[in-house]
Image 1 (tube, rainbow over the protein chains, first blue to last red):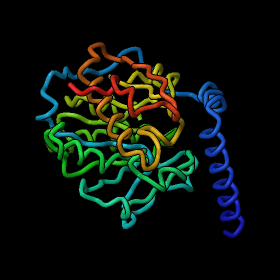
Image 2: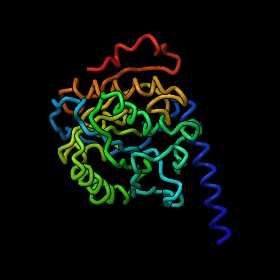
Image 3: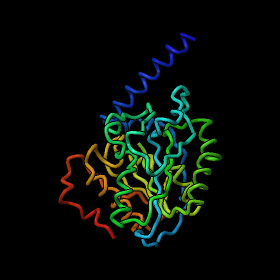
Image 4: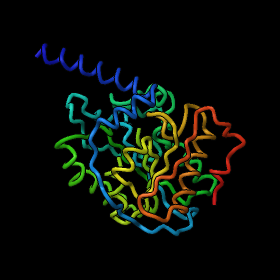
Length: 178
Length: 94
């Protein structure tokens, strides 16, 4: 057990170091992207948008690993990642949020969560009347999702949040990676 | 993240995202994306820069209306040192 936990500590340190380097050096990140595999598509789904934005309800979806301090953190022990999501009430204070994600350097986002999850900024756009409404909840994933977890994401968790946003009558979703 | 965006768009909700990598976006083809040019971990900008963060959101909403071809990745190539306090035509709302 001890050996396994040492192994995890080492991998966690390695992941965090790689994340720091990829964040600091965009050319390294580009090299990493070239060496990685992504699912490829030749077309995109499409929902026509010609509504008045000042009357629209908006929700946020991030893959920045943001969650309430009171929620279960994303799983960092599984090298294939974590396809689950956390629901974040729209009126959550930044002080009640934290980030669990070892695959990017979130030192800046720890200082101001709005740079990956602009929860306060969208409220301000509502107050100024630039958008109609902020949905009562947003959703957050941890963007490192690989191998068998991709199927869970595609078949289960992504459809679950799409259905939730649809039932909330959300008109616009802004998605932020990290 | 593009996979999640595709699923939400397919359910009938209009979506737009920040792209941190044109290479990834060109493969996953989210319906609408804006490549900001900001580094990893900074899709909406930098700590404490509330005005620029809001401008980035306004810019996304502008492109939500503007993009009319599925799979478009608008390329802005912003940098941390851009003078965002004066050059806000990209963010002009409406």
